[in-house]
Image (cartoon, rainbow over all chains, first blue to last red; front, side, top):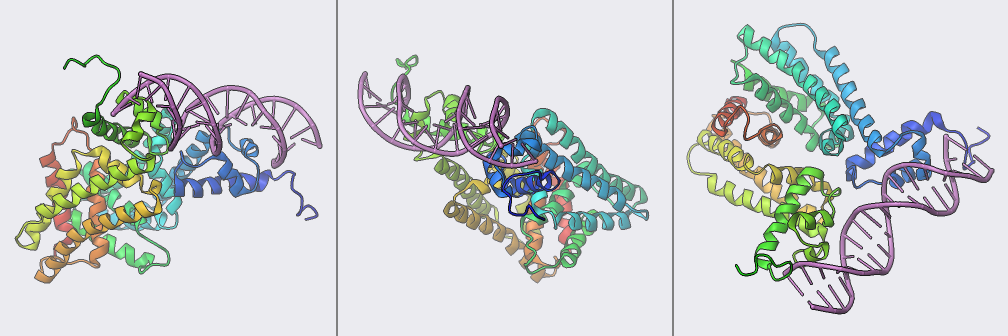
Length: 198
Length: 198
DNA sequence: GTCTATAGCGGGATAGAC
DNA sequence: GTCTATCCCGCTATAGAC
């Protein structure tokens, strides 16, 4: 650690993640269009030009954040969609969705609010991943209907309604607030279960 | 109409609303920070400087759009909260919320996505109005609990969960799509009713 | 890999003519 | 009330030194 005090040098191992972290936090707070590369650089502790060692441009930085979030979400949701009857799988999905989203408020915020700021090509990619996630829940609802334990007017609309309800928890949850994760899960699971039960 | 072809003149009667309409549409599409005063002026058909006859600055333009939307929402919701038992009032609220939001996709989008871009003072005003709207629904849920027809773990969390679910309809609804307003209302009312019924 | 410096552009807002 | 013109500033991205 002889170089701890240096102002210049090679830091590729750590600067890359720090750029992503700073961009995520600032974009979640102020919005993509309102955050400048200079602000991100200042947060990391480098000059603006140095960022371009880690991203070809600002748009790619946003896309990487959103794609990374959706990849994690899809991979985790598929692991969580365990065997069992439809009611058990719906409980598992509800629990998973809340457990995944609550610790990631910035990622959730950016992934839902910055869709407008993606290029057309990048938007298509993220939109496809979002639909794939909806399919995870819709499969459960369809299977539950086939089993006769669920009843609803339209599975696709219900899928979107439930995901909107569950994701909304990120709008008000605060880690130091009145409710812990388990309590919140119980409250939402009660609503979800009753809303689709036959 | 002797002046239809003129390029300059007095148009205060019509330009003001046109500025607001153009700003709303552009901000809904691209985001407040990404839209320039020059773009808004071009949409209206005037030069950028002329906009400042109608707003002291860009921030006030955003605030007026959001405050106007929330004022309409609150006034209309209070008219719609008719008498009757809690179940009837919940049905009325659900129908009202969907009927109010579906024809106003741009207002809804801006009012939920641009909170970050309000100044602190303006944010506090809009946030207070948002809470007042939540209170309309929460009163219904509390009354229903007292009547014994509703049961839920927490009325405030349930209020937010239901509003998030209902507002989410604006994320996918298209006027030329598969569902008409009545069908959508039926689907969502089924979910809402079942989710809170004792 | 980071720095300094800058090119090239577009932003919000204002001044003064008409 | 709208126009033209402009001030002053900050933006993304790049070039070249170290």
